[in-house]
Length: 317
Ligand code: BTN
Image (cartoon, rainbow, N blue to C red; front, top):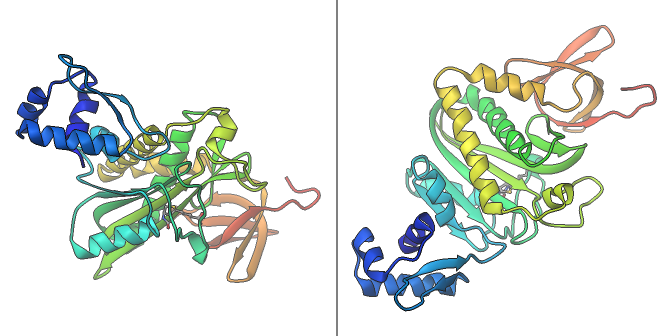
């Protein structure tokens, strides 16, 4: 994290090397060195004589950890960014297993081995889509893991609604826009003696890439405008912490109800495939543990895992 960049972005006005040095407790030479590094990263830094330094332009299509830090410093202490890495979930796990860091954010502009649910691959466009993992330090029973899945999906869906209407949650935690996928979430955990120590929330959001496939879409395609990935990510994380605070202060129910209200295909015919086994019926409700209630004729069954799709049989809703 470049402290000079944090300070310049925070102030948003020209600052002399002397002032920056004084605020940060470093020499003017050290300030100058950091400014050079900021320029090497592609920032345009104004340095007119007598006016001081100011960030004129940030590099496009890249995540800027300093911007995330500015909005989330009181919640996340550790920020890891690399232009390219195999998978933010894998990297987060590596970092946490090395050191018990507390909440961490791992982000990249390019994943070379992005992982999806059920052992699938996750592809994203370098610099155009959002790929990150939030590692939450928790102390919870493993049976409560699903609550984090619910909480995160709701946070991302509610954030996307700030851009346009029409986003819904595909059980348990994908985000759809008119049945086209815009976001996938891979939640994993690090446990110790039946307790969750860390929840890893890895999300991939299709933001500015295109053209969309016939099964997926992107935020730019929906709104017609390029979105700022730094702003989107900080808004998502603020929502996650808002719901986390609700959960931690005993109001998980309101988040659960919001999740349930925003689930796709409620009261419609659906098909769920799990390990090659297919279940078809009407999605009529969800249980408190996040599992689905599927009505098949006279009987109602609970489904705990699998891949859900809308069933488009003639006569089905
Ligand atoms: C899915 O839809 O199957 C879930 C996809 C999750 C992808 C994200 S991208 C960031 C994080 N790192 C990964 O390797 N996977 C998740």
